[in-house]
Image (cartoon, rainbow, N blue to C red; front, side):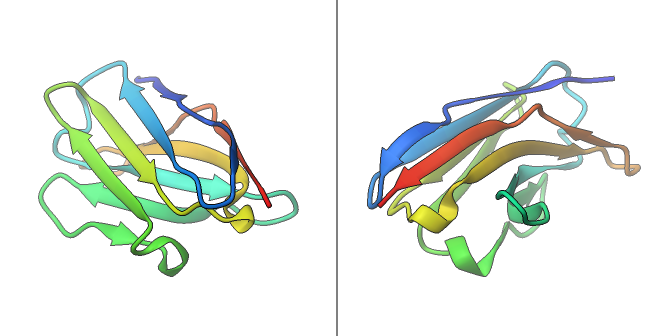
Length: 116
């Protein structure tokens, strides 16, 4: 088992920036995928960005050019730098980890609110 703990959410004005961080309690994702999903009120959870250990980073079209994902396998962390934030980015953001054989883990979520 592993825990994913997010930090860095909050309230920001449109056009501002926030950085989310996620730390895994164990080093079990170094050969898997880490990333971020989000869920806005009344909507389904959606992919924001994922980064495999050695593959191509994937971004939702809505955040390309504004968000940047990065990970540090030595520290078991994955970060999401969010720039040029829009009110439609308001959501609970969840850290995600998937081991090489497919077991998935989720963080508890952190609220991001962008005011217009």
